[in-house]
Image (cartoon, rainbow, N blue to C red; front, top):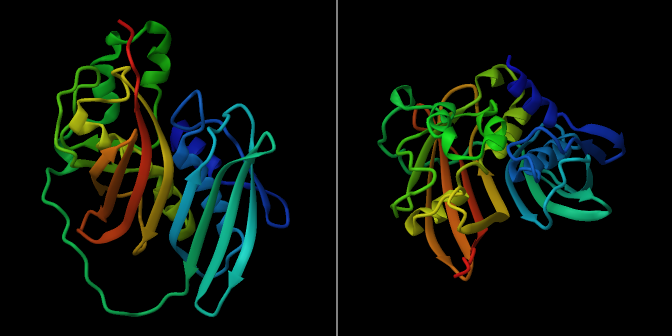
Amino acid sequence: MSDAHQTLLNLLAVEPLEVDLFRGTGQGGETPTRIFGGQVIGQALASAYQTVEDRLCHSLHAYFIRPGDPSIPVIYQVDRARDGGSFTTRRVVAIQHGKQILNMSASFHVAEDGWTHQHPMPHVEGPEGLADRSTLRAAVVDKIPERHHDEFLRPRPIDIREVAPRDFFTPEPADDKNHIWFRMAAARGISPQLQHCLLAYASDMNLLGSALRPHGQTWFTGAVMAASLDHSMWFHGPASFCDWHLYTMDSPWSGGGRGFNRGMIYNRDGTLIASVAQEGLIRQIKTKG
């Protein structure tokens, strides 16, 4: 297991402090200046799971309230809203500097049988012939200041392969549909609960970028201020994130400095295992002149 893989698993191993009170590290995620949103969601879900027995999460709904500070820990306070016959509900508040940075509601469901149907997985190129994220970044690293090279090329725990990668710095306007394959090989053999936490972490990757595609923007153009505002996720079936999953995303709408994004996550055999929805800030940065 690589250092990057172990770091992510350590991030999701929140520390119990008191009854329904947990602590997670703010370091080690995707971004150096603020805590990656998926990290806070994953830690909040991991905290909630420590108060739930014999049930898996079927949905969560989170609001990002303030940017997270990676230099200090995050405190997670879990409210045991309800323990019912079929459903368990938890509310989790993430706190730094005495203020909320995220609040989340999550629901857990006892296993039941029922009717099943799903939309089919889109037909796209498989991951084996696609370049990974590190290869794409290494090819353009000379286009950014040398002081940022180490962070830009830093090994990440999630292996991501874009079906149709775009130019980082001078992208053309493109269709809002956005497909990536992703996995973490080191996730083999971990618990179903931790599989959900990993999938929640990864579900914040590339999603908001869908709303930037029609406008010819990426995080690297310098023309957009972007941040996740809220994040909802529904788990439809068990995940095994050591294997490839297809994350197919789109953005039906943007306006007023916000973009709405949707995602569906399929395992390799085409089973829909999760759905995601998110609204994000995509504010234009006005240039002088």
